[in-house]
Length: 283
Image 1 (cartoon, rainbow, N blue to C red):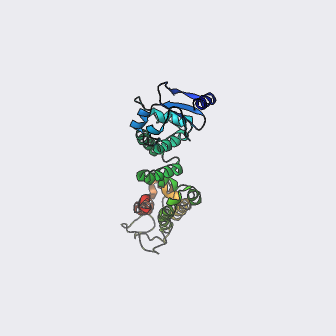
Image 2: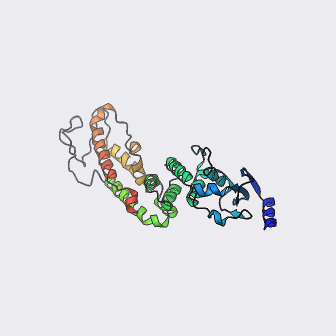
Image 3: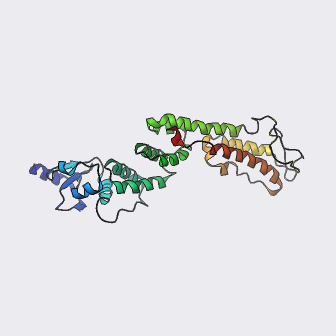
């Protein structure tokens, strides 16, 4: 057994930080770096490693994580200042978060959860999967809207199987809102918009959704503005994530009454969006 340990030590690189002579267990990373750790610290700060009584100092315990991940993870089980993850790349943060959950290093789990959530709206697919695997519904809820900006087929191909049906239901609610937004000016025929009579736009009566009006000041057609908005909404449910861009038409002062009509349209969409249940209600 001792000769085997000696051979492993010769073939592997020793961690510069975790190399104490009095450490009583040695782990080997997936890329061949050895970490000498005190089982007392493992017992106090983690529950996912093999119990100390099953770890022998004469054996090297292989782990599936890389040295870069383990180097950060093991710092959380020692009485020293924990690593600052604020500026860590997601390529480092994601495997660290998974390792923290796998080995139940509680201090690392809490910090990683905070920074995984703070990474949004970037990397929503990976963060949704992470939140689903480890039961963080508040993170799942936050990851859902950014995913709506991605094509449905792309998201579905990367979504955990357990979330596929809930995601289709959730997406369907947003698609229903989009359909209502696109049909706002025709869905109710010529029913007037419930606003006070408007003068200055060629009529002193409430404006019907099917009536085309133009501003006498700049001769801008409200119909053209409606077509412009509908073209933007034609991008799909992703357009509903940025209504400021969709409705950014730059009405001149003389078209203030027409701007009110468009604002009614936007307000209707916003009301419908607020009625969509949280994604986690479908899970």
